[in-house]
Length: 126
Length: 126
Image (tube, rainbow over all chains, first blue to last red; front, side, top):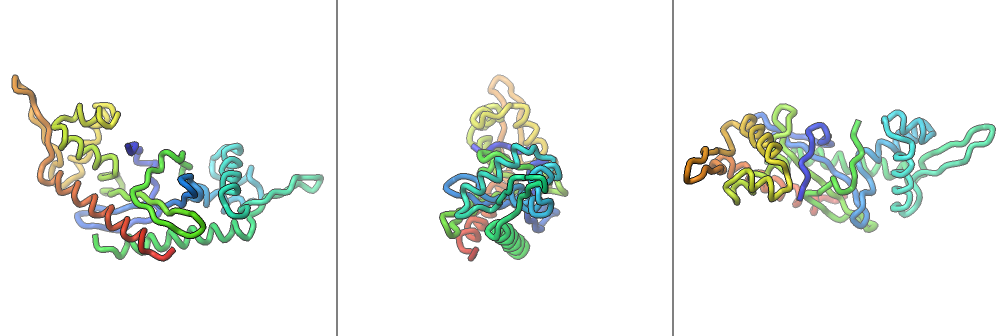
């Protein structure tokens, strides 16, 4: 049974116009064997890690707890054919966290998928 | 900022296969001036009202509170060009609740939209 969601939980990734002042909205995500692998939130987290070089700063910028951010990253790393995020423990120079080439590719592929979705929703005859 | 959802909240309405054992999943809904108008849950509620002839029974069948079900129905009736659900107060014969022709059309249109989404997600080259 589908749960009824609150309006503000239904952030759309694509939208198009249908008649009578109505808009069609949609979300996409990618699963691996029934488990969420990539979604809008997860991809945004990867982008923020790439931007900040730190999971702590990335999580803070999304108002997400550090532990939840790490849980999501470890989950993506486990489901991916190769890790999307790598971390070096900090010494005196401080450690760091960065996206691997596979991580950058995943971000790029996801937004390409969203662009195709937006293109479909704009051009389909509803 | 998109919220990160739990896996079990991401009930998909359409799904397709992409490479490496990954599935693409998606949801669609219809908004009226930024407010949710029709969604999977709302349409299911309309179908249950049609089936049971009672909002109370329809809500119960979805494990939804009666007041929430009425709130959703009143909200859809307000946003629709004409009411989707009508109610007759109960006398000795009991009252009743039913879908109007517009309500039945909304259900049909929504599933047609979902079918187009499923068709796209199956045939698009990701």
